[in-house]
Amino acid sequence: MTDLLTHEEYRALAAKLALPTNAFIDGSYRPAASGKTFTTVNPATGETLAAIAACGAEDVDFAVLKAREAFEDGRWSRMHPSERKDILIRFAKLLTRNRRELAVMESVDSGKTILDCETVDVPETIHCLKWHAEAIDKIYDQVSPASDDHIAMIVREPVGVVGLVLPWNFPLLMLAWKIGPALAAGCSVIVKPAEETSLTALRVAELAMEAGIPRGVLNVVPGTGPDVGEPLGRHMDVDMISFTGSTETGRRFLRYAADSNLKEVVLEMGGKNPSVVLKDAENLDRVAAHVVNGAFWNMGENCSASSRLIVEEDVKDALLERVFAHAREWTMGDPLDPEHRVGALVSSAHFGKVSSYLDTGATVLMGGKTQDNAFVEPTILEAPAGSSVAREEIFGPVLNVMTVSGFDEAIELANSTEYGLAASIFTANTKKALRGARAIRAGTVTVNCFGEGDISTPFGGYKQSGFGGRDNSLAAHDQYTQLKTIWIDLSDDGDEAVG
Image (cartoon, rainbow, N blue to C red):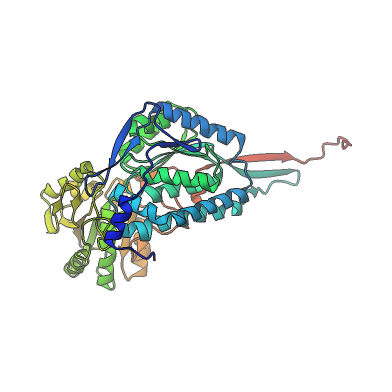
């Protein structure tokens, strides 16, 4: 674990940060073509951090042009795989050297706790890039079982120019989840960070250039969805879009693809994820710790947050007693204080959305207080299955409790949502655990724990949580490549050999 600094030391570092403000295109920082900027603020304090280049369609066109030039001339796409690996490993080492700067920058820009930035987000970002770098020269193509008169080779080729559209909840980590396999495959990329959290993506692009990634291969174009995201989605020379964010915006990218060049689209979207606790679950204190972590980690601003607790009535009271005890340990306050586990929500607008669910008539079992138009304390509600609290993705530190009478009812309730990203089931019965894991319609199901797997396991959803590909694991490389069959005729047709 990283050695943490004191609250005062983190505040001093934050005050001295040199913040990037311009787009990073073709190997250098440059202002928006229009000269326009937008303000990024520290959500915990309301303090203005920087004026960021507010890019538009002209900047997108320029970034795509330079990405296409880089792809077609092969400066990265046709570089030897081991050379790409070496550069990406140097890139990861540079991130490691600058890890504290990145952690502090991430915290002040997003409201995330410095504890999470230092111990989870930045280390996992670095690990993700190293993992995909190491995979580059270890992924083999195939030869099919054709007849003796033929050889059929199945080879992977990079898909081309890729638009990577990021969410604001894990700016660094989602950047790594996308650029890791995309760059490993040989693609050129244009990153559109969320306008709320552009800083670390811009800084990472500069470090990538320093590591040796050629100009034009990694570009970062900040701006709003209509000004940057839509032009990227509609661009006729973008071969693919990978998007993480809301289901509503994901639908837009499908329309953009349909209206333009039918580019490939990979979507990872919302979730309303259940934690199912059966009456035979062992060690309720440990179960409660996992439930609380799943609900309140990253302020619940997590598409795989376990925001629904579905518990058998025989064990409900005993479990909730322990859940309340663990939830009290999640202290809220200044994100730069490493003692705090709950920071600020990403913006005042998002605070308004999350806090509105506290006034829906649900029974408040714990919490429910807000602070400074930025903070929502860990809150536990009890509302029926048909309510907005039970159905809609709140994306905040709010856990809803629902009681069931048995296994079948629990699984039915777990599946009663339009989403299918993640789920957890807690039981000492191995058959019920496996039956439940099979029956729940979700891309990741954890047994007796909360989690998302690790870098080696695919991450993505069912239903309206997304489709088209998976993040993490070798499966992530597939979405950034095309498969080509090369069919070679070796038959002797009677002609004399030439030469």
